[in-house]
Image: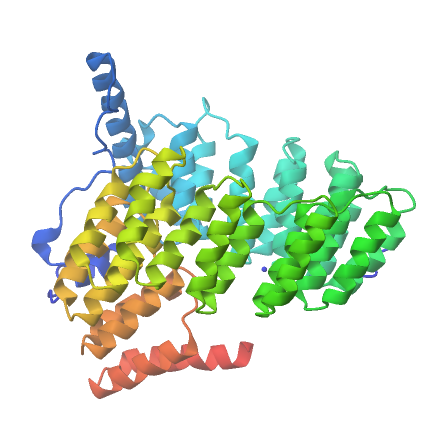
Length: 519
């Protein structure tokens, strides 16, 4: 094909600690520092063989210790090569048994820090008795692409090609990251060169390309490519659903309706996904009467709505503030015998929380979900924690956070802690916020702070007249290639100027100038 075409603590030992650890030392009192392991999970309830369970806990403890050793070493280094050399010359690291779970955990820990992730991966490859699986290469490809390190991503892709490790999943990640970085033509070029990776141009690979382009709102280009390819690559129902979703995303819903007719012309029957996508668009526009019309059309076409359809409408009604109608959707779904799933219950709990029906939400979590054999996920717990924080019920929020930490189904993410951090700032409990929660986030759960959490902390510390700490968090963001919002920079700059922190002010000013140039 011819190419036409993302606390109140003092600073302790500041000068000898690596940046990430140093930041935490400015936020957490010295007496809070200690060794935190993620291996404190209790034994599985009801285990019949105590000695076997103890042995398993011992193995898990060792593996978590291994990960903690590597993470601490990596955080002390700067840059890909320094990470690699630091790990290679550490006697403890050289004795570690490399496993899939260990590498997975390390790549997850450094998913927003490509230099550390790449350095760790290079170190892992030096072990002669361990060969990384293709899925680990794919993870690293995705990390590099997400951080817009396109040359390094392509170099890794070439390395994978030489070892016959490139799969369609790899190509999908590469194309999506090219489009995400604004270079959709490279995505098309990657498709054109599929044969060089030992892969075929077929319906599946064509759909990946079209889906990539449509998600980046390149609908006209996707349409042109589709018309060129359809003569020798047959479309399927998913092909048309990709376009329906794409048209709705750019708010051209009439083309979405037209695509349903085109779909029928090719002999494919529109499915629940086809209709639900258009329903989601109408809900996003608060045109709920059109959404209900589509529900009627689905029934007329013998295509009953599923739990996703109902969940979409309920969530949108909640977002619009119409809690009464949202809860009616829940009843309507149950009346037609549509079985709920975890995402439905997440939306229902959110609706009940927004409506101030806290006890009803607790009933759903504790009684209704178990009775329907539906296990909660991290988002379910996060919804409960956020609801309690919204109603300033701190102890209940902490109880559910602890339950999440001990859950056999899921573990906390950064969003699990965000509502409590926000609540503590509002209540001016900065010491508790920094000493307890942040210590858990960084040291216990080894989570990376995201943009929203960094923003919350910096703004909160500035308002609390703790701009020194806010500035260190700003530096940590930059080192992790997380770009702060311009408003955050302006607020921080104003505060550090008030404290006569001239060197810091110069750093922030320079960064803001670069932001303006690149915008």
